[in-house]
Image (cartoon, rainbow, N blue to C red; front, top):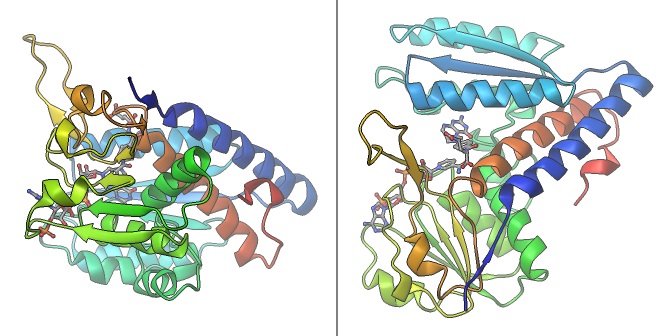
Length: 299
Ligand SMILES: NC(=O)C1=CN([C@@H]2O[C@H](COP(=O)(O)OP(=O)(O)OC[C@H]3O[C@@H](n4cnc5c(N)ncnc54)[C@H](OP(=O)(O)O)[C@@H]3O)[C@@H](O)[C@H]2O)C=CC1
Ligand SMILES: Nc1nc(=O)c2c([nH]1)NC[C@@H]1CN(c3ccc(C(=O)N[C@@H](CCC(=O)O)C(=O)O)cc3)C=[N+]21
């Protein structure tokens, strides 16, 4: 038996259609164009790819997109100055500072300088605290995308055992909070977890957010489980001069023989992240202007 492949790319396209419809309504009814500002510091090629596709998709959905590319040597003062300007700019409703930042910049300080109402990544300490205490405001895009895929596949998550491998502030922890909020029983695993394979084998839902290519092996998966692979790992091409290959944290070929359903890489969680970013931006634009949240985006 081979697992169903969860089509994140198609699901993301349907979310972007709803974002475009909601954007069209905000424009027509209120003359409001949702705007997303993306800030990229430095020259990291992978970050440049993501930044470009975020901007392209924002524009395609009818939103305004503002790009700020800063040199690697940018000082904290300069970056904080830009954030102050974006916080004050009425055309900007979402601010995303691409991570990781160069090491001389304090990312917590920078993220917490963003107006929490414009923090479409959901990384500001006040949004993290709200999520953890059940007062949801802006929800981090990658975990939100994973939750939407899980609900679409499984329906009610009550009582399911979800194992999240990874405890970062941007993926693992908010993922665990969302699953807990959906009444799953949640285990969070990390580099010090004893018997990771044994824990994973108990998972009805397995979310891998580690950053190690193919680390989750086929026989770590409970037969029939739903596997969400967040990992984006770039491996050099096997042929000389070829393009890099993208692989997840799960050994896909082995896992798909055991799992009930699994997300591929590429085409799984990645596109959902960007679709959720656009959805968050439209929601932010409505909230900031005291308008009701668009019906199209209510899930
Ligand atoms: N699809 C998408 O849209 C996105 C994909 N990603 C991808 O997701 C992955 C994770 O990202 P991120 O959370 O930022 O990564 P981090 O490096 O911040 O966190 C990785 C986590 O994995 C844990 N870990 C590392 N090694 C092991 C191990 N051998 N066994 C168990 N746990 C381990 C770490 O544990 P410890 O805390 O103990 O060190 C840590 O909690 C990356 O591949 C990243 O590229 C990220 C964001 C968005
Ligand atoms: N402030 C901030 N917010 C982020 O959301 C953020 C970030 N920093 N830093 C980097 C990570 C990574 N990330 C991805 C987004 C989309 C794809 C994506 O669309 N991937 C495609 C493939 C793209 C390709 O071919 O390279 C896919 O999986 O199908 C991947 C990864 C967002 N991140």
